[in-house]
Image 1 (cartoon, rainbow, N blue to C red):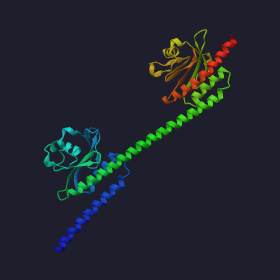
Image 2 (image 1 turned 90 degrees about the vertical axis):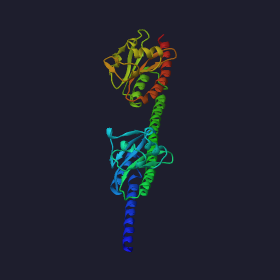
Image 3 (image 1 turned 45 degrees about the vertical axis):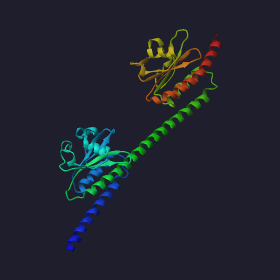
Image 4 (image 1 turned 60 degrees about the vertical axis):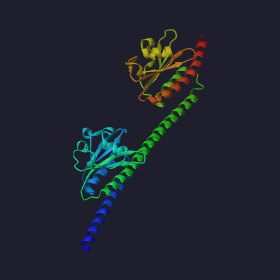
Length: 343
């Protein structure tokens, strides 16, 4: 009799030990995860392989109003097979998610309809201090103690909460990295503008200043191409002066600004216009420009011409706008001086 009792105690000890070993394995394999689906998969596999559970599935809350089946028997449920239940439509879900209470199948007849693959399931909430993350559905061996599964669900809650914290940290790190990248780019752009200012401050040759504007737009500020046109006051036509990236013979290119709506709008308003406002490209001589931005080179009383660039990324527009505004002030003085000399 005593020997039989000792054997039973030994078997109980071995079972508890094996369960603790399983939990230890889950800790090591899941503690660094930030993806709830990966955590759910590990837990579901352990339930199936180590804890005498004949069937299990893990459901997670989506947008506070629904629960979605994520994993079943250690396999991710994908696509159309991933069932979704509106929490308010189910007494079981309301009990689990809103009241955070364990549910026995016998308490709710709807169980057979919602979970037809489970004959005698128990439902355990996966919860944090703030809210319920989801719930666990399992069909256990009749000889198994329910308390171990309650402990398992409580432990799963802690791991899911850690995973969500990891996820937030990763998102914040990503935001910081993106912000650092933006600041680094802006720093480079400001440095470029500063050095351009030093270079042209003493220049008197208009063509050289325009060459620097076109070259800086492409080489330093990362425009794909850049073309500079000056407005001829006598003919009201735009004449090519400088380019970077294409149109090597730009000096032979003449454009009627009123024939192209994007340039006409920029000429009349003195404001930047770009390809997103129009459905068609603009033609500059033989060159057809698609993703263009048109910057008016404005003087005090008149638009002197345009810098037209091709872009691949929108975040360079502000820097080039600063460049054009600065050079416009320099050009305004140089053009006025030239007109006075010619007069």
